[in-house]
Amino acid sequence: MLQPKSSKRTHYAIQLISNRYKQVIICFVLIIPLLLSAQVKGVKHVILIGVDGMGANYLSKAQNIPVMQSIMQQGVSTMHARCVQPSSSAVNWASMVMGAGPSLHGYTEWDSKKPEIPSRQIDHYGMFPTIYALFRDQQPPSKIGVIYSWSGIGYLFPKQAVNKDDHTNNDSLTADHAAKYIQAERPDFLFVHFDGVDEAGHGIGWGTNAYYQAIQGIDSYIGQIIKSVKNAGIEKNTVIIVTADHGGIKKTHGGKSIQEMEIPWMAFGPKIKRNTILNKSIMTYDTAATIAYLFGLKTPQVWIGRPVLEAVK
Ligand SMILES: [Zn+2]
Image 1 (cartoon, helix red, strand yellow):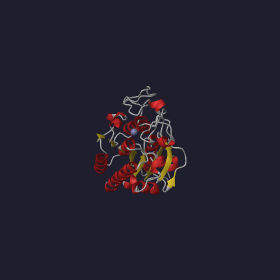
Image 2 (cartoon, protein in one colour):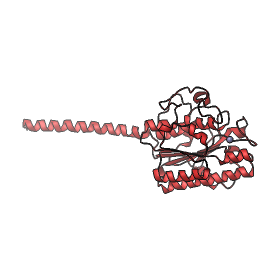
Image 3 (cartoon, rainbow, N blue to C red):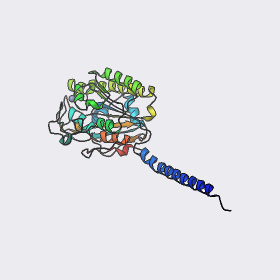
């Protein structure tokens, strides 16, 4: 039967519209998984906890550290990650958040406040590109915090890129402030720095009873932070990484002994393997690359850090 002309036109129009819908639907079906795969699913928060001077050689022998022991059981760990040379603080805290070593970012001393070697690249914050800048630029609504016991950390991030810049000068306050900030703001990325283990090392000696007591103290502070993550209701979406800038020997560090060079690296949370010892090489600048990977952040060409893929499910 011949259809009247108008009905034919309507039918044609409907078909045209439904074809358009099909195209749109196909586009979404193809594009949405690509968008999702840019960020490791389930990871919405990363808390990076840095324990100054916590050498892997000593941590592996530490007793009564239930929190870190449970992180290692629930997640991944190694006692053979390495810091960069020299085995000093600022140069290594810089490397950890800048995805590169001192020859590139230029911070070379224990107390560098600016690069002694001109940075190979400068971003629009006037610094070598940091993980903080990647968050701010690529995911602008991110809540980013830095809470730290040692003033030297204050020179190693672009102030304009973070929401919270809190130098406490005291580990107990650092833990308190971090816990409160996590519960109140649920930050996307938070860096927490503890200093007491390094102080015990310099004051009494690496590997002494006082040094191990300091590690036990930090262990309970890490427990306080994990509790706040649970209280904030974000534990299912939060990856926690615990590492250090360097180890030490006798009452010092900066040298080339394995006690100074080896640092612990542990992580747990969504998409992180359980109860796994990491065997492959990890450098401190891989930490920044790993955080960028978890959030699908594009890393600058000048970075040499690689994500710790061995840790990810
Ligand atoms: Zn030190």
